[in-house]
Image (tube, rainbow, N blue to C red; front, side, top):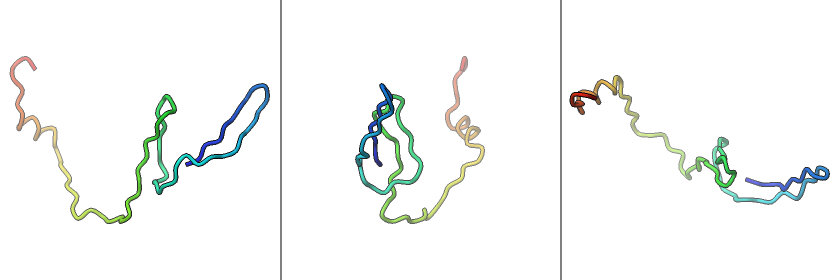
Length: 73
C-alpha cells in the first residue's frame, strides 16, 4: 500500500510515492471515514479450503424455539 502527497492550491502538485506498509492482502479494502485506518483481509501463508461448511436454514425459527421471549416482547 502506497501513499502520495497531493496539494491542490495554489496549483496541483503531486509528491513522491511512499510505501505505507508491505504485506500480502486481498484486493478489497476500506478506509475509515476519518482516513486514519484501513480494513483489509490478510492472506494466509496456506490458502487451505475449510474442511467443513455448516449451513443453517431457518435459523431465526430455531433461535425463537431456543430462547423464548416472555410476555410483552
